[in-house]
Length: 379
Image 1 (cartoon, one colour):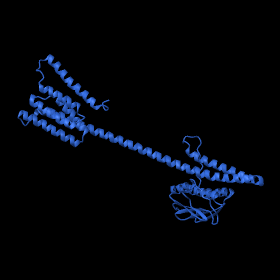
Image 2: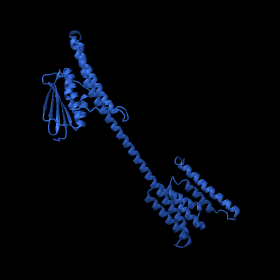
Image 3: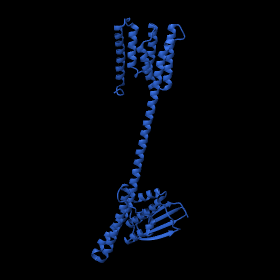
Image 4: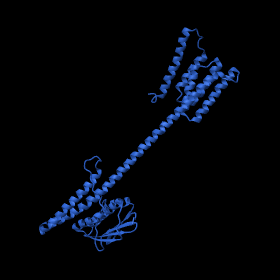
């Protein structure tokens, strides 16, 4: 409530303090004979009311005003006004809590020196001991206000750091989610595109042979069944990664690599793609990420060659001391129809994830995909 309506709270505080002071004076005067309030006392109470009510709007100006009021009242009455002393403490606290430390200390020191000098002039004595309680009260209020400002600044900094840390965690989590979504999308594309391409080709062949040579339909249907089983197994492998850690069934099938290349070549050969394989250099054990990337790149490149070529492809695996170079392309003299999709993008992303590069060269009679995948030579 106070934080939402600070000026109204100050007005209420000024009313309570001023009214309470006058009420206390009336109660005391009813029991003990006391002189009536002087004009200086009434003016001092009015000034105290105004300074407390306006302390948040113009804190530094109000501090100078209440200091001048203290000196003027003491010069007129030879005694300190309790409400003005209290108001000076409130205003000094507000100045220290809302401004910088240097400004608050300079204002407090200047006002304190003015009060001490005013009291010394009134008494004609450079040692104005009467001013010490007022100076002590102003000093304590300034110190308390500075401590409050420091605490507020510390809490604001802690909250800002917590907010930034939470924002960083959210951004990191979002980035990881995006990366995982892209990885899963690449896996699904590589698995589904290859096997569905095989199924599509064999289904078309079976439909073509059904009337002319029905005895050759069964091998095509068997290949379709095997391709369907393979895609289901690989989809199950990918889905297994998405399962929760406490699920009862956990898939332990290793990720595919170049060790499964012979089975892949048999599949594409059965689908009608003739692949000529050329291997140079000594084969080496690849890291898991690089091994998976190499297999998926070969799989996707052969799938594209099957879909867009004329039934033949060249596969070259060149092992060097530092990198594996994979070349997949249509042989010279074949025609290639252009294709589009996420396959080429996925191959480039896989090569990049393994720390390598992927190049595509399209010539009038040849289209080649070259992937260079570095690895650490442990031989």
